[in-house]
Length: 436
Image 1: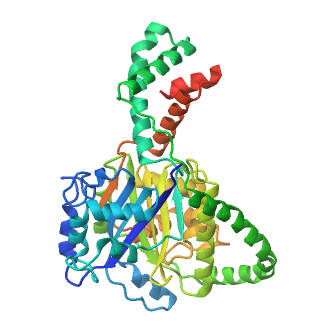
Image 2: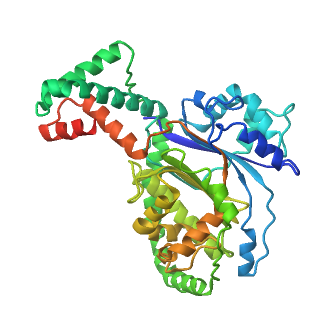
Image 3: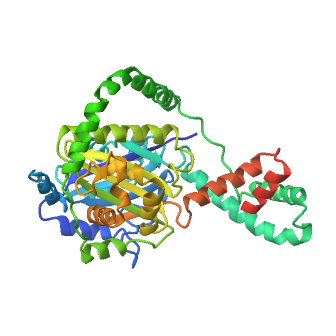
């Protein structure tokens, strides 16, 4: 299989150039669809990069930095920062090399509004490598499912669905084996004519496999070895945690209508949406270490447990990442998800509110929790105010397979399995036909 990786190139915007940068980024978008990229735009033709799942340009501004004053701490300075991030098949360096080869002119125009970049002097590839920021945790809906596979399986589903409608009355709905045989023969004919392709998966890179196995077994082993230390410090941790939770200031701040309008005008143009939030980590080493440890465990769980179509009980997320920036004083979170923003939030509140609390309760402005997992997101209105306040509008957003949800991708892969697996029983065949 081909594993996925990420990139996130960041650079501070030059003083006085923010408006001009936004205008240039807007030229990448489709007409009358705010924030949604034209895949064939002149600057960065996203659609030509067949390894790219999602990409976005977002300008990270610290508009909620003043909230940290409630903790008796002065806000840290933060200049508007351009972030170009994406989720890709294969390794980062080879993809950035592709970008530098096929979109150099457009990228140089965009990055020319950033400090430490000159269109004439900069080696674009090396500059992007230097300005890449690694995430601390990353979630992939289905590790190994490539963009090419997604497009091929979507075409397979559409073709089979159309053909099944033609033959079902002739063959009869109950003749499932004859229906299947006709469908399989049809697929072979379409493949022979070059109208369908089902490319076999590439071999898993040996280096990635070794590293992944070492991570899978090494992390639990290390945690087991240090578990006696955890047991010793657990009572002190619990006492300190409750002290901080009881003293955390509550911030009941409604999001302005102007900000809500800026966000919502970009949403619900497709079956999927983007989400970017940015905020401060609560002051103190205790909060930072707790936050980083929970994110570390999240990364492990996402890599080795929830890597086949769902994150706990949530099946609507394609990709997500957590990134600590500003010397660990701030955190950036980005995701690509299916459905409306409201349903996305409700899914988490109702199904895994405790998970939200674990991950975000160490951020400034988050509703107070009890023992890290209770309250917090369960207090629906304060939580929704908080996440909207900290949400950033996305200047440009690209999705490689518009109109397809994560559930659609899983269904299409299941249909392909039915084509390639010749040994299914009658019950499995009925289920397979129902998917088509």
